[in-house]
Image (cartoon, rainbow, N blue to C red; front, side, top):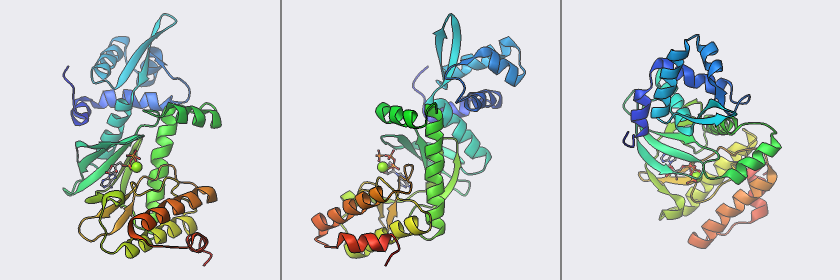
Length: 288
Ligand SMILES: Nc1ncnc2c1ncn2[C@@H]1O[C@H](COP(=O)(O)OP(=O)(O)OP(=O)(O)O)[C@@H](O)[C@H]1O
Ligand SMILES: [Mg+2]
């Protein structure tokens, strides 16, 4: 089969195959590889019917197989989770269609999409572990036996919740539109990363970034924790900053100081705007 775009793979998966993929997610922390019997019992299908489903899911690369002690076992892939997420967001009337890839991040793939009103949206598909095995191993130790699937799904939910809270308190983030499995959908921001922007009013942009960090800290009790000039998009039409990429957000003063330092260093180096770290920290923490 030629290399298929994700949208094509999504359209090839039938409702029955979708239900089979869900069984993999239901068992995510019990089995790394699923034996066929579990699928058969859970779906109430014959052995041959299950075989047909599994063959098809393998063809679209939604599952992988492995022979373990003589028995063929099955494992859902990132593509399989992506397919579940997109189908579910379609059913929820969040995503009408999936477009081309915007970019591959360290721990996600971001796609263009359209909602049911024909508006352009961004669809972020989390893929923890894709290139960060070390990170995952660390997380696994911390959380004991959580699977890579659970970690991925937790990250998507954490990002969506952060966007919801910050947006509903009028912070500068893309409006979240919906969430399912490993996918977070949000308003598409037409713009460039702060690192590559030439700002005409840098002080105003900095103030809005700090105000958003303050909202996150004081109302949502979270710190972005990976804030940099690459995770802020400056909109082309009105030079508005939008802070993106929130999966690792959590309450941590150490991370807060690092985030503030990254931003203040950048504005000092590029725009010669000087600020006192202590004063800004107190402001962001809501103490002044
Ligand atoms: N709402 C959005 N509107 C427009 N573009 C977006 C949006 N969200 C993400 N992007 C694009 O996708 C890229 C990656 O997104 P994000 O930073 O959230 O993911 P990531 O996995 O952390 O990627 P990276 O490793 O590059 O930081 C962004 O730099 C941006 O170009
Ligand atoms: Mg990023």
